[in-house]
Length: 213
Ligand code: AP5
Ligand code: ZN
Image 1: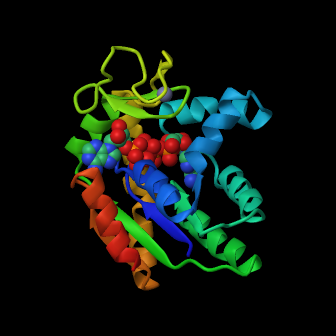
Image 2: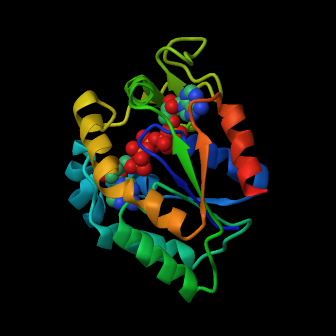
């Protein structure tokens, strides 16, 4: 089963994708993670996209479609979870074509609904362990020992360069302008299901599970 997690920055797409990977053996394809990896490894593409990502704007369709095309050639395990892709109508059309080419289809699009105040609160307080990826938050989830990961003991906490108020404003504008039209696009195809992303993480996971049943 191939699915899309659709929602604004901070809706919980990454959090729920990781749960689906653990519970169902699905494969998470996060274009944000792929682009950040390219940025830190200093590839030509990484250098090209760094400033765009930090400002909160979308990188070009051509780049992200190329990244996804590469991944679709690989093993699909329990199915792909598209996290943060597609983000424009052109990307959605490209995804349909690419899936068709590898003999796959898209079963479901989960729209995660969260209001803007909560998105701002989640994102501006977020930090992550650079070693194991465990997520933390200034108010909601503080490590037992300041600066030390509860999960792996590393002292390597990181904040994303685009998790500041200015970039977040741009990310939200990009979402409403370019990505939210996908809600109508997938509704018209009969693939859209929505979940309340404001609920607790495990409750959201349960709603997603119900939507996929
Ligand atoms: P990307 O990495 O995709 O970022 P994003 O969409 O802004 O999403 P986030 O990762 O910030 O949020 P999320 O929904 O995954 O939430 P999370 O689970 O982390 O993209 C970054 C940039 O890359 C873009 O701006 C663009 O430049 C570029 N890019 C990427 N894809 C692209 C594409 N297809 N086309 C063009 N450009 C592209 O949760 C957030 C926080 O909330 C965490 O602290 C978490 O612990 C907490 N949380 C989660 N769920 C809950 C809950 N239910 N209750 C309370 N807290 C919760
Ligand atoms: Zn850790």
